[in-house]
Amino acid sequence: MSFEINLGLAGDRPGTLDLVELLATRLLVQGNSGSGKSHLLRRLLEQSAGLVQQAVIDPEGDYVSLAERYGHIVIEATGDDAELTQIAARVRAHRVSVVLSLEALDAEAQMRAAAAFLGGLFEADREQWYPMLVVVDEAQIFAPAAAGEVSDEARRLSLGAMTNLMCRGRKRGLAGIIATQRLAKLAKNVAAEASNFLMGRTFLDIDMARAADLLGLERRNAETFRDLPRGHFVALGPALSKRPLTIAIGPTTTGSRSVPHGLEPLPETTTDTRSLIMTAVPGVARLPAAPRPKPRPASQDLLVQLANYRPPVPDDLPAEEPFDLFERETALAEVFESVLADADAGLSTPATLYQDFTIRCRIRRLSGEAMGLSEFKRRLAVARAGVGGATVSNSPTWESAQAVARSLPDDLAGLYLLIVRAAMEGAPCPSHAALAEAYGTSSEGRARRMLTYLEERGVIVIRRDLRGAPIIAVPELSIETAPGQPEVAMAPAKRRSRGA
Image (cartoon, rainbow, N blue to C red):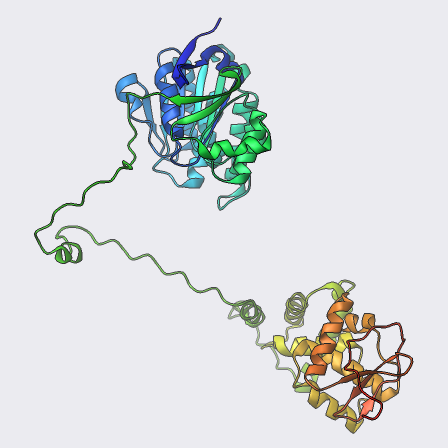
């Protein structure tokens, strides 16, 4: 047995929908804003009113006008989710059609309210499993494909309720009709449960391709969705048509409360319009100004604030004994070494290690700013380069090298000192792998770029011997490394003539 309702015209014949088949197979409506999607839902609700019980999840309050002509009960959601669950149970028990208006709630509260109401419909007693159309407008709000600004709990509750409606609702008499502006924003496990489709005007390629896949059309035919007029939908499914069929949706007897889209002439004014908008109206309370958001501090400022923060000290605690300067420096050095001794220190960023360093300083009760981020990064670079305990550290040449290193960026100081130490000891030119490890990375390409930067600054010069082995000279100190391995490709040096 079937019962057909008239949606509009499909060419020169009526475009019908089998209501009995719809109750068993569910419906998905898709169309960009302005395509006539809400008009289609209103036409479907009007044509089936009185034939089957209806429940509308209305996020904008557009369908409350159904109450005046067709007797729907309007439920204004106030945020009491437990009450909505009980109301939904009574709706199923008394078989009344309702419109759940969510326009007074924010996005997260709308998701919670819809989940509570759908849960009440779904959990009704078995003897109350009567047929019901459950229409959810703007379904991407309640079954989003990705996490948004709402909490994970609200998203989980709403998505679970929508999944129950589309996947398990048929056995409980619930026929889900979901409408969305964009298929890409709708959870796939919710959209995939629909067997009937009405696809309206769509402009984005990703949505057109997905609509074509759902309708079984070839990708080259997806462009037809872009050319659909307002109020025209391509229908497919057991309750609509076995082949894709374009239906022009017919008129409705009720209207939406939304703003009309036609042009409205501007009013003629004879008074001073400036005084009308700039002068306060007596007796009208002034709205408080919205607080301006504070600018977000930079990441380095946050690290400094974390390092300087000290929890309040109770008055009854004894005062800490001040550290001797030598003892303090010794303690800082010990904390610094303990940070580097961690097994994961070589793979961590300077910011992460600095946060660990400040926490360890608090544990040692080192009051005051332990060490600035800039100084920490410089010490870290030197330590990673392996020059902290070099035997050449007492040489005047080494002191000059440290003066040059202070003029370089913090993360390059250790790299430069590693090259200087190799040159002072007459060691071979360090390989790219050794330089990359000293810089705190595994990328040899980055090591080459750092060498190029140091050469452009004039602090080193890279050349090759007759075998092609790289040699790094330090002009400021008049020293150079021994030749390295010829197969190591250093940064390209300018070709020089023998007479140069």
